[in-house]
Image 1 (tube, rainbow, N blue to C red):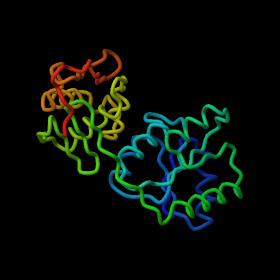
Image 2: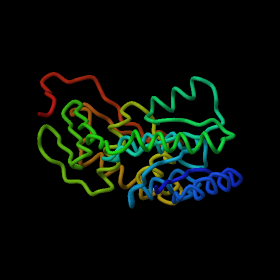
Image 3: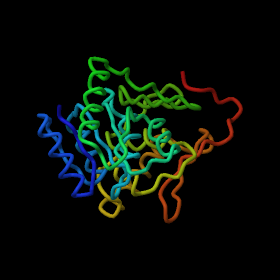
Image 4: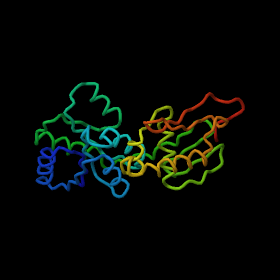
Length: 238
């Protein structure tokens, strides 16, 4: 199998890589979640091994992105030193298929990978359901966006931004998270570009109170898309 492994601990990287290569697996090492998201946009993997806490975009955020944006459900195993029940529940609830508590044991590790691979194939996941809220419809499967039934012409990057914001209505998304998910780069590398694209998304989608939404920058943090009180006479898009 071709496996992407997100980890920044060199000792863990060496051990896991050796175990996987001994079993004939191809292991691609990535030390930052934004790097992994870039790779997932370019190529497919048979399985993802995600450390919880890594620099930049975390393993938990990568998992959320993968479940929201990949049309095929890639098996995911979380590898973490966190052993408290609430952390395990959080990972599984976000879409992880299994988890392993560090330090790993080689026999158990391979057994879990093999068992998950058997469960995952040949099943194919259904495309993500369109987001329909207020007058808007955002369809990740067809990469289309509508306002009151009328299509909105967006560039690929603008669509990615719109989809991300509508997936997290009411939540502040950090510039770091947005930059990692959409550009696969840290925020300092795309700061001006990010603000320009956000301005275009606000304008093209007409994210104004009369349409029930407001997209605002949050100083020192990032951006937030707010759903305002439903307006009389405004019907959801068909």
